[in-house]
Length: 614
Image 1 (tube, helix red, strand yellow):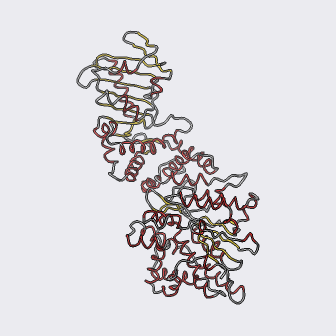
Image 2 (cartoon, helix red, strand yellow):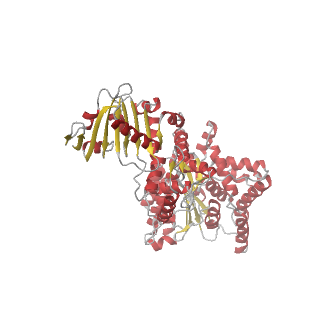
Image 3 (cartoon, one colour):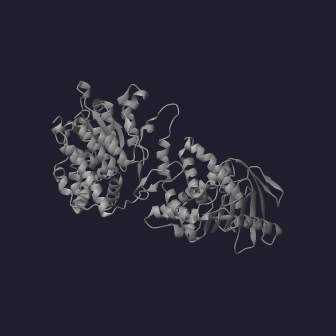
């Protein structure tokens, strides 16, 4: 132990002082302290058993080069952690004392106080003792660091006590409430941790101020904020920040303008809930960094993407750098507009059936249904595990492959229509992998693996012109099986187009282990008549297509999965596309259009094993 304590009353030095032995006097029942740092464990073990009333003022930042970032992180995220501890440990002494008001935590909201003060007294008696110096309330500071304290004690009538009390009160005036009974009771919402977290963030946002005059407000000087935002925004755009710091930067950006001033109150209220989603979004952004030297796997990911927000149980759109994700924009269409878009959906299916030498409307509809349901395929997988054991999550395909000869319109469906509807406009071609490595199939397999395991995104990964022999590779089969079997909760899917070749390398694996996890859809027939005639018709249809119907279906699917009936659960287990079939059928029936593609709906899902090459 290297704690030196000077007993000023006796002019005595304790070169290896024991803080607890000297400070814990039976007559003292109140502890008032100022320390830069401390912890729940330290407070619970070393203060609460010995003092009936405890009030601590902790430092919010060290005013270093990153003071704004540290203050923001402690104000937002660390505060949430402390509240979560209370919520999840209500029987702990720490929680009980916070809730009954005998433990109060505050923090320095403007200027940091470097002096540490520990004032102990008795409410009924007239005695006190006070320690001032360098020691923080941490186990390391008390027992390991080289620290110094001055120890005074005596009657509360002494002038020295009045000076210490005035010093403590002055620091308290320059602090704000971190946790106390009044605030905590307002934070906690029984059996709703998400709302509790939102309450803490809202309260923290309401504390922010650009003025030091406001009581219980935390001052973030606009000039410091402006410099911080300028510097850190450049760093995050260049991918130079770690996840933790990137979250803090994005929090600050959400709450302050580029001039360093607080955003308008209306914007602040909106920002509060969006900040909750930042951790998940930053995880996706961090995985999507670009390297100027070499493309990484994540450079092939779709951007922008839909993200599943676990906190709000809703779809969010991916953010731009420096912005939080936005809840999915609600599509509002008039009856006339919706009927027109449903008619276009039917026309595209029928174009692939009527204007081909051999009709392929069945697999075309199957692909569109899968595409529309893709952001919720993971919900279907989870439901399979909750039902009986006749089927499992791996019976729901996590990828769909459009396979066949060239000039059959499969890439048109995939590269043009799918990318247009989902917003993933950088549909990747397999040729891009050749520049990266001669092992193209291995590179594609690695990218798929990386994307499937990325937290948050639920938009499909799309790769054009994949060689069918990819599916015969053992590493690919192992990757598909591993992800299909192990990933629970939200996950994206994949879409491939494959040009069937005449040589032996064009063989597609039809092994059960692959076929149950990847849905193969065969496109073999060319369009009738002039080779351009059908293409021109397809072009005209696709040029009119937009994402409105697609995103309307996402809204309806989101609502549908909130409360699945037992009857529907059985139907979903029988057909993984049942949710989107039900939603689209109801819409088509409502507008008297269902008969146009009814024959495809009534069939079982397309089976490549039965119809390959026909």
